[in-house]
Length: 111
Ligand SMILES: [Zn+2]
Image (tube, rainbow, N blue to C red):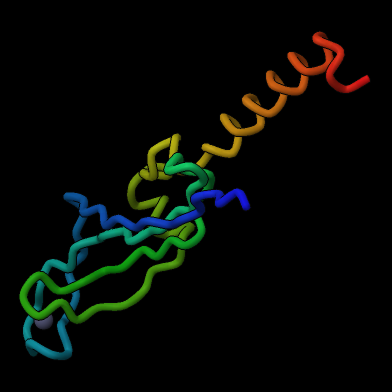
């Protein structure tokens, strides 16, 4: 039996992007920080695609905050901050499959 290592991993990114809001927990005006938590699926320990992402605005003192829609978070940052390899690892896997398929076809393995 062949075991294919399939897994997932997660990461949190913080940015120097803030918005002033009244914190309901602290009871004061605070500069809420934007952060992104995301997870990706992997195959043979190489990322394949992002499986979950969540932008959050959080109070720097008490961590109280809320979820921000993806479009709003990315517009605050000017783009998608997730590294290319985490978002598009499936393209690498597709390329590997195509190369292996062509090599097999040329060697007569698929005839
Ligand atoms: Zn607070």
